[in-house]
Structures are given as structure tokens and as C-alpha cells.
Length: 239
Image 1 (cartoon, helix red, strand yellow):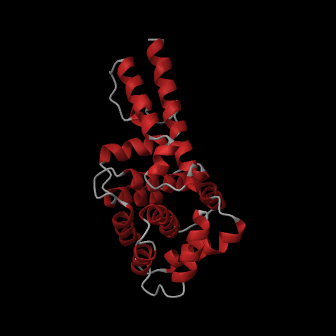
Image 2: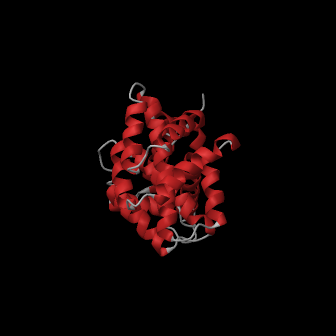
Image 3: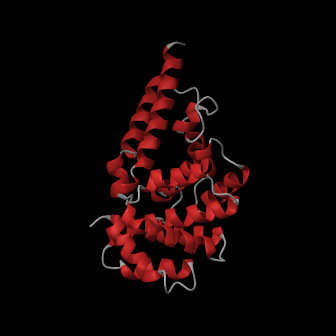
């Protein structure tokens, strides 16, 4: 059974009774999937991505067609489950609770409790992918993402690395994309790059709870890491 079948069953169960919005949704994830920790992580990730995408759209005030396309690039929702996803998205948008409360609850639901939690970084990466889909990161989106990163306990230096991954490399510092200081030897850069590639391999992300259906997040991240490394390699070898 795919994550969408499980998510569809879950959303059908909670949508009619989630009078308290995010509180009911979070409690339902914990209760319904209490006997299967791996499935709970996958569903929790999916719920967090959908709910925070909805909150980001509400904070921005405008939902563009580019954002809708980017949303479905990440989600690749089968047509038979599109209504289920839309139901949860609408529930989050209509909930009077602000996005900060959503981010706090989703951090507790999905996160490890430690700074720079990998799963919360995956969620943030997905939100960045949607936000930048129209070719620019608007101020309200930037404020939203930065505040969510603070709630997720993403350290500022690491947030800047995540931000740099989502900028055009003509604007971004490739060293910041890799999260390594300038002036390091090429051998140090290469070792750091290889470690990043290994740690961000799609299999690693799936192992920590990223559903296979969301693998676009992993491939986009690896592409940014590869492009930054190639730029540094060219510069150092020609120096």
C-alpha cells in the first residue's frame, strides 16, 4: 500500500472531526499509527509538508500557478488521492491557528529534538522548492521560512547553507552551499563534498522517514551540492 493510500485513509478519518485543527491532526497521527513507527514518520512528514505548504501560501497571500505546479512536483499525487490532499491543505489554510503554532507542533511530531534535525531540514527544503517556483523568493516567504527554521532549531549558519542551495549559483556562494569555509584545501573540500553526497543519498533520506514519493527533495538537494562542488573544483584547479 502506498503512502497515498495510507494518507487518504487517515485524512478521511480526521477531516470530519478535526474541530481543533492542528492539535487534532497531530494527535490523530500519533494515535492512528502508534503501532508502526516507520509508517508514522512517513505520514507525519507528508502531513507536515502539506499543512506548512498551506500555511506558507496563506502567509504569502497569493497562490500562484507556479507554486501549485511545484507543490505537485514534490507530491506527485495520484489523481485518485488529489481530493484527500486538497482536504488536508484546506483544513490547514482555514484553521485559525497561525503558522508558528503549526511549525511548533510539526517539529515535535517529526523532529528528533536536536538542532539541525535532518527530517525537519527535508521539510524546509520542500517548502523552499515551492516558494522559489515563480523565480524569486518573496519577502513574506523569506520571513516565513526563516521563522520556521528557528522553530525547527535549524542553526543560523546551517539555515544560510540551506538558503544558498536554493539560490541561483550566479548569486550563491558555492562554499556556503557546501557549508565549508573558504581557504580550505581542495582535498578538504573533496572529502566534505563526498560526505555530503553520502549523507544526502536518497536511500539515507528514506531511511530517516522521507517517503519514496517525495524523492524530488533529495535529488534537487544533490544537484545543488554537485553544482557547487563543480564550481569550486574548476576555480581551485585553475588557480
